[in-house]
Length: 69
Image 1 (cartoon, rainbow, N blue to C red):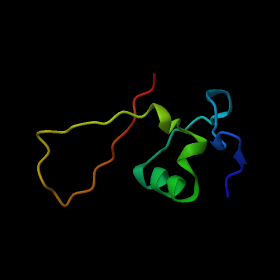
Image 2: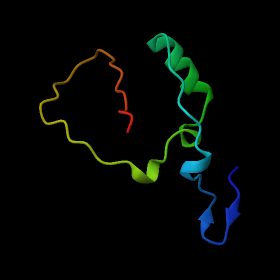
Image 3: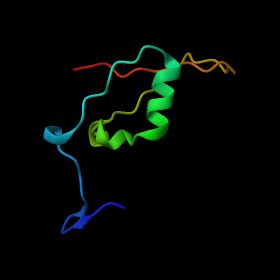
Image 4: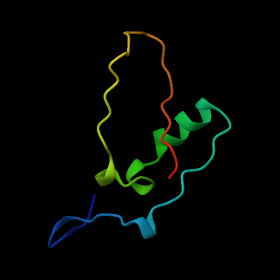
């Protein structure tokens, strides 16, 4: 459970975010994220909405990777 402070839930700052490891395969990455919390690695307050207008329905799973900045 997250700790509460005067301004709401405790937030991680850029200083204490962990580095996302490199993965040898999609299976390794999937297993990692099944057991780790993304908020330890990513600052979701800086996330942006993305529109994919040419996306067609599919049943195939594809990985979407975040660019490093």
